[in-house]
Picture 1 (cartoon, rainbow, N blue to C red):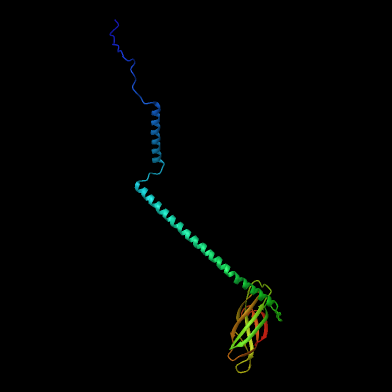
Picture 2: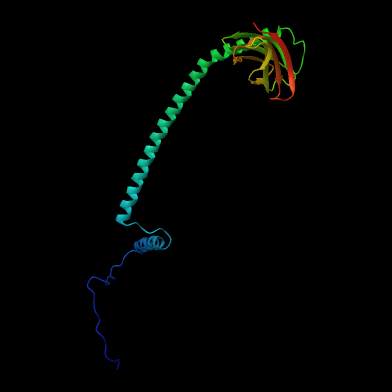
Length: 230
């Protein structure tokens, strides 16, 4: 009437326990680790530079060591060069100090000469270049001369010129004669002391010398004076 009945199983210790499963938090942790590792691998393969092989790593290390050695060499060379430069500067400073005294003495001499020239009588002929003083002497067929020249206009800038000395006296035959000697190149500032020796004609005995100053050979005359020869 009620059909076939099923057997009833009786559990001695109560309800059957379910099978053991991993905790949820552990599953999430493992999933996160796997996702992170996969992401790192993906980024490294897709966007980051490729990993170097062992051979490439050795080559890179060798290149770095060579570059570092070159840097050290250049650093040492720079130190040596800096030391040489310091030595050269010290030497230059010492030389400048050693030359300071002679330069000061030379400047004093120039000042003394300028003061002495200022006391000389003026050139009676005047001119752009004045012949303020002169000394002439005939010695062994040569004419030794010392001539003082001055100029005032635009004296700050040296002016080029030529001094022509002509001597009058007796020739080797005993007759009156005049001889023009070799021209002397000049550079005249506010003053100039011209000294030297010029050859005389053979047997010539000079009595007086005519000094003429030109802007160039055969050019414009700038000054003139006649003086005796001792």
